[in-house]
Amino acid sequence: MSESRTPPGGAARLNTAVAHNARVWNHWIGGKDNYEVDQRVGDHVASIIPVIRDIARADRDFLGRAVTYLAGERGVRQYLDIGTGLPTADNTHEIAQRIAPDSRIVYVDNDPIVLVHARTLLTGSRDGATDYIDADVHDPDAIVERAAATLDLTRPVAVMMLGILNFVLDTDKARDIVRRIMAAVPSGSFLVLTHPTSDAEVGGELQVPAMEFWNENATPPITARGAADLATFFGGLELVEPGLVSCSRWRPAPGSTLVVPQYGAVAVKP
Image 1 (cartoon, helix red, strand yellow):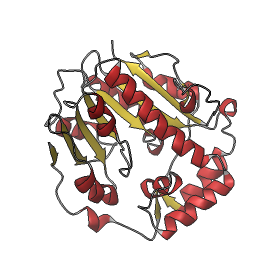
Image 2: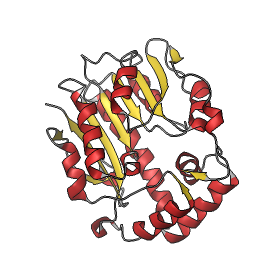
Image 3: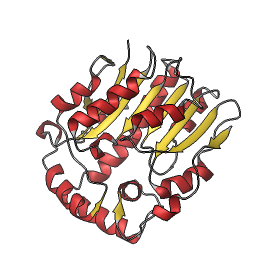
Image 4: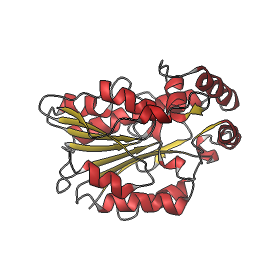
């Protein structure tokens, strides 16, 4: 089943004159759903921090490993993917429903070009459900309320927040968003998170100048956070091994040595 409860009108917000994160990210991972301005800004960011394309791919690969782990080893059958970005290969629903066809997935984003593509590309399995809602991460209560139309919030949910809280500039606000969403899901639910960092231990020194350029030339504005701040987002949760690490080092494929300045973690609600 595939459905969307989002009203039309997203195209009215589409601004192709300013680079936007979802489209630039799509450019970095080799996608085609972007514009010249996205390519220009994305290429300039890459000239400041050449590892950015590795970050984008590592984040995507982390998504695949995390969902495979949750669906295959932990039996999770419901996913709330907030800040989904533009659909590419092996989206959350494709990975989860490949393992368990009855999996139910709700995607959340508020970029109008993502909305257009979600309506045509995010189709689920016959036994499960895939829904898309047009909503802002800054309004977690609305996200939870609308997600409840597709997800059973009395059963465990994997809350996916990959590369989205970096657009919530106030750390207290970002922490509160996580707290409110995780409060709405039951014991046995998971938080899956990635976030860029400037921590030198994982090679993040170039994130600051890259983000300064981004904030002057693209939208939405972004911030990096250190491991200490990110650890507080997991208050009341139990981190799954290996804990909060470079997302490329979270249960990596054998032989992988890549380390990127993007933290990743999976945690369970006791």
